[in-house]
Length: 281
Image 1 (cartoon, rainbow, N blue to C red):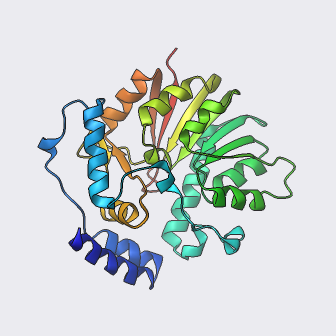
Image 2 (image 1 turned 180 degrees about the vertical axis):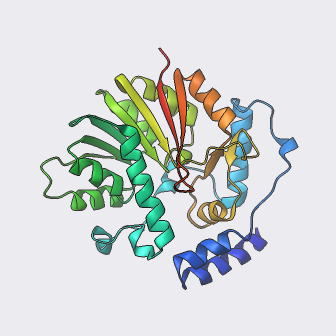
């Protein structure tokens, strides 16, 4: 890992220049493993143990859900949250395009109910609340919960804010017209269990939206720790879990959990792939 730490120093130096410069450095390195060493059954505990062993090797720590917490959010982000503070036209435009595509794909009537996981800075939450939707959000980081509360202050339709990890969904009794993951599902340490839990949280006709998640056939494993530069930086620097999924595995995982799935491609942005899951029954 000494070589990785050396490269990450280059990332830090580029970040001091600009967000765009940092992202260019991300594209210059990656980690590789012998795929033949993978256990054969991606739904087995043996396979899961292998992946979390790989995570531990890269991050230098055991995985706990508390690793997902961060201290990024502060007072200035009330008015200038991510991605705006990056001052990158590419990063901001991709984010705004995805926000529009998510709203378009949700296609919900007024006053519909939405459960959003991992809202982070709250940009999507705020937009949906401003539209009158009834929003419940779950985020592990209290700083983000507080930030969203400040950003939504003054709205008649303030979102319900819950601090906790993905498993917090077990405490909910209400059902929702839609469940939303926008760049958050890949942080879940037990994604199959989460999918099973979601089935009973959908109202009749409800659906689960997976937007801009790392799900594609180019991923070299059924599922596992992503080994690109940006993911390595996130894992090593912050301890975050950065998973990726092959499309074949992801669709099978949803099928086993009782869902049927549609894939929507929006080439207007590189992030523009959305999977929409419905109750198979």
